[in-house]
Image (cartoon, rainbow, N blue to C red; front, top):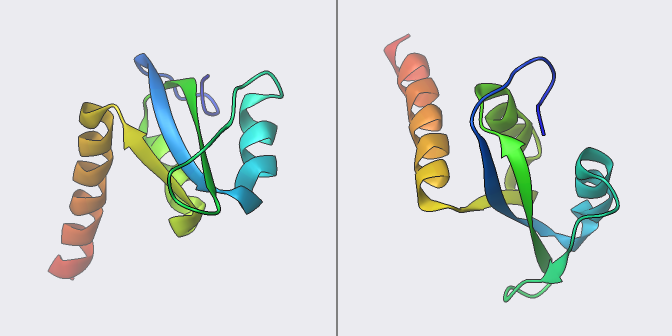
Length: 93
């Protein structure tokens, strides 16, 4: 799934989220996704196909700590790297 007009490599991404966020996840990815209980109480997870982009990472960031990318490892690393770039920008000022 593309985010806005931003595309990227499409990947299957595992996302964990607080149960209160189910509606947000369904609104973005549709009713046909499979949602499973997570090992963390009060959380669920799903795997969705997304175009990896800064826009996707921005969407995840905007949802706060209630939604987390948990896989695959290289996508998690890309997200962490993007966050670190932003942190360094703020620190330089």
